[in-house]
Length: 323
Image (cartoon, rainbow, N blue to C red):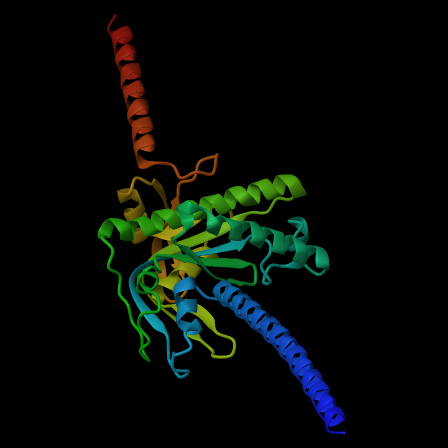
């Protein structure tokens, strides 16, 4: 009897141990699956956050030790800001003008076309030449970008103060280069649009406004954070776009002088009425038929050549008259 009881106990213990081993294995598998799922979720969240926020800002918000009431902001002394609007795609344009340009967006086709255009513009941001250009947002049919939002990238997420501020440490050469880079980015956007026109049998045009100066950058919203920039520089860049001409890059006089100091040719447009500023002197950045910036040196050489040619002509006419 005792032997039978012991045998039953041993068998029960053995079955219990086997059951616990199986249960432990299942729990480990579930834990691994949950950990893998959590890791995937974190990776996806990082990707999504870095898609809606600049990398240096996303790092701050990914920090688990960051106070939830933190107000993130940065101050920049020099940033180049660009607004680029698709001509004919504006919601304020009349329907006839939109139909003429093939930009009627009442259906899904218009949305698909707009998505293709914006996607092609976004691809330029991955070009090494434009790694400093930051896409801010797309408002309606206007593409907004800025160049020079770099101090935060250098600081990364090292600072977690409730009110974060950074100022530009770059040299004057680096500062002026921001505007040149953004002007080149605008011409590349024009080239992309030209290629799309050829493939889609369209006649889209880009109207661009650029301004440089001081801006405030920061994040608004907690559940749905939005990175944006503010200041008179942003307002004037928007005005340069709205008062511009399709196919042209319009800038203020100070920006034109800065570009010319870097060897980029600008042509005076004359006085232009700007809301809130009145009549101001504006310029168009010179863009060649190949959609590249026209260097100041080349234009100067052409002028000298024409001047010498006219002098030679005048001399020959004088000699003929004398004879």
